[in-house]
Image (cartoon, rainbow, N blue to C red):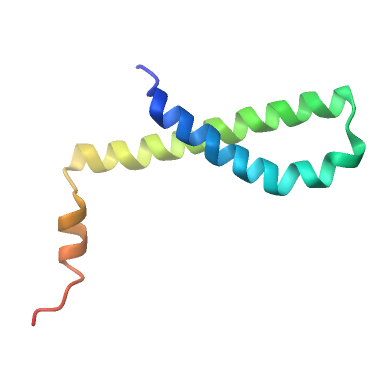
Amino acid sequence: MTIDRLRLAEAATEAALVFGAVIVPAAARLMDPGLLVILGATAVMLTSGVYALHAVTFDCFRLTGQRAERIFASTKGED
């Protein structure tokens, strides 16, 4: 199993956005080395979680042969 670099970069960016918007402002006044280790571990867990979610979702679409045209075609009117 290989790691998709583009998917990893996307996951890291999304995790950094969530991390920067929610966690860092709350912890900014309490920065110390112990907290930085915890925040680093949290960033790694967020990145790996987002990566895994993307891998499962997009690999499932690829394996089942689903495409955007087929998904949205069923929601269009019959007119």
